[in-house]
Length: 292
Image (tube, rainbow, N blue to C red):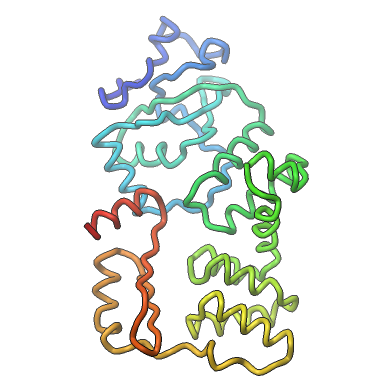
């Protein structure tokens, strides 16, 4: 096993902990509760990881931070057989460390069965700020289906109001194309909540296309859905205004500068607002520096 760099030396290596580098790690009791520098090759990905998308740009930023400062917060793993460990939490730190060629990573060792692994992975991910709404909804659904929690029990477990949990779960009733639109950031959770009120999925998709074409706000989408359900004509207020030429000329430069698709909303009097999306805490800090 390669030695950890000084910046990563938050824990002891296996040989130091067991006082014998040639000993097979067969008893979890020798390691539980310890933080050790663990060989990355000995760590398996968590099969219960609810996160399905890892932003490459954000990973590179985290990798640069780890290269400079080391892994500040150890990952958590559980002991398997034959000198193997499995990630409980910290997959982004694990991936970023591999990205810069590190061979070890500080790891906190614990014991957990499969159900505990699933619950810990789901709950830990739900608490993160950078999960998209559909990932959160799917995590809630897995807690209900696989750990047999009621919505009330789950709201207590994750520290969220039951109404919040219900709102996320309702997103899973949307057409899969609309769910993908939420995941990719084309529309927000607010748009999705408005579209849920349309039972027919073909009609959902039709309205979704209108929302994208017209770049409608959540409020405009709500009005559109309300008028459709009431059988009234579409209000002129929800018709999207043409983007002014002075905005069009600068939009490409703004997108390139911030590294994201910037949204600009302009009213008839040419007043408006600029919306800059971010995908993680690291991405937010990067944008903040650009604005300083």
